[in-house]
Structure formats: C-alpha cells, structure tokens
Image (cartoon, rainbow, N blue to C red; front, side, top):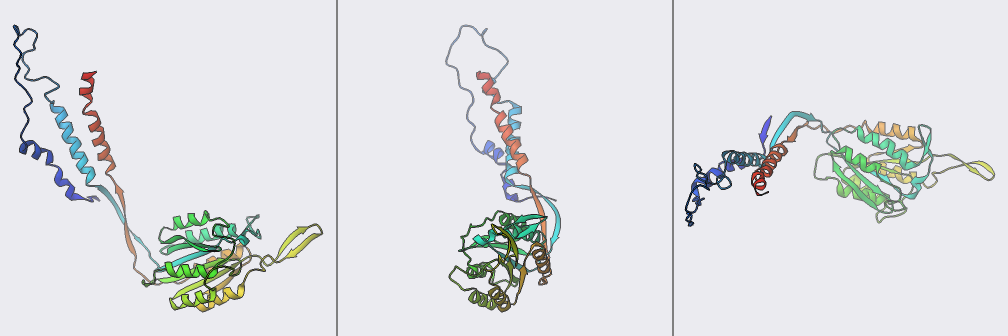
Length: 328
C-alpha cells in the first residue's frame, strides 16, 4: 500500500504557475541606444540571445525538479502487510552483578574455563533472545546501581548492552538493595502488566543505602515479583605449592538473604553452581505465566522520499550547466 505521510504538502505543486501569472513579468529586453551604419555583423531571424531567452527544455526540467521536490517533502511511504505481535503483558527487568567477585573463573562452557560474568552473559543472552512480547530492561549494579536499558520491546538492544557489560563498571562492592530500589523506580507502576525482576549475584549486600529485605518489602507492596539467582560453584580445586586443594569459592554468597528476598516478594530463589544449572534456571523462568493481553498489530513502513529528492537535486545541479559552458 502506497501513501503520503504529509499529503497537504502537495498543495504547493501549482505554486510556480501561480507566481508566473500573478507576479508582473520583468522585461527581458532593453532598447538599444547604439546606432550602427550596417547590419551585416548582426544575425537576423532571432528575437533574443540564447543566454537571455530560456529554452523550453530548461523550463520543463525546472518544473519537473519542483514536482519531485514537493513529492519528496510529502514523505511518500510504502506500507507492508500487517503483522500481529503477541504481547505477554509482562514487564521483566534483569539486574546483573558486576562486582569484583564476578571475576572468579569457576564455570565451564563447552570445555572452556570462564568467569561468572561470562557464563551469565552466555546464558542470559539466550534467555533474552527467547523473549516474545515482554518489555525488557537491564540494571547493572556493583557499589551502585545503574539503569543500562529502560523497559523496551527492543530485545536486541538489551542483549547487546548486556554483552558489553564489564566487571568493575559499577564498582567493586555489591549493592543489592539499591538494584531492587532502582527497579521499583523504573517499572511502570500505573500499568496492569505483571512486573518481574530477575536478580543475579554471587555475593552479599556490602554497599548501598537500602537494605535488601526492606527493598523486597517495598517490592511486595507494589506487586513486583523478584526471582533471585545465586551464582558460584560450591567446590573448586586450586593448585598450590603443596599440591591440589579443594576450596569453596562461594563463601561470600548470602543465600539466606536471597531466599528471603524471593519469599517476601512472592518469587523464588535458584542456585546456579555451573552453566548447566544456570541454563535450567532460565528454562524454568521461561515458563512464567504471562497475563492475557491482546495482540498488537504492526505494519512495516518503508520511506521512499529519498528517490524523488535525489532526482530533484540532480536536476537542480544540471540546470545551470549550459550557462557555465558558455562562459567557459
């Protein structure tokens, strides 16, 4: 389907004709005051020099350039077929820990040893790609919490911003309470959408102005359901001068607080000790029941103004060429 976004601009098409007939025409010729004894040096049969009398083809090209310029200004568009996009009616915010402890390399992906943030990015990116109809947002937190992406249907942008996140970007400590508080500020509390926060961390609350439990209580009052994920292996083998030894790299993980946050807000707590468990957790989160909501009809729009505009500029550039050639 073809349409003009601004059809009223087409009313300017007859403007050159109106100017031609309404404005007084300036005399193109002047009376010669020079008397000559003979006319042999003058060409007969012409009424005006070529550079003074505009040629017919130049007038037509000028009118054509004007028509193309007006058409481009009216924004011609080609509308594609209507596509129904499902909307789940869910606002889903993700909060990812970027504290210094996320450098711990106790995860394996396809046989390669990776740190906790790399594993989180890998699995969470697949989770985001599977989202259909959710408005997604991204919060990155460390010593402070930052809104990296507001709620949007553009999951590709949210995914790209997650992959670009780096450890230490938000500080070295962990402000879990502030991350929950920021999610409360950014979620649309006036809508009827189901509100969900997925919080991923490998430590305890060591920074921020709001305690995690207090933030969870505020979230429960505003119908924000929080799913917490504790990241980190229970056991890791280290090589020392005295041989191999087993250590627990997740001693700083405050599972008690994470469980309480999930319980108070009506969510659930998950423990991710390796990449397989983390993948299973996101599979379970995929099964969250969305609120029923009508589909949104979208139509692809292709702007076509570029073509008439380019032709108009091309004609405008070639019109003065004959005069330039004559002067050369």
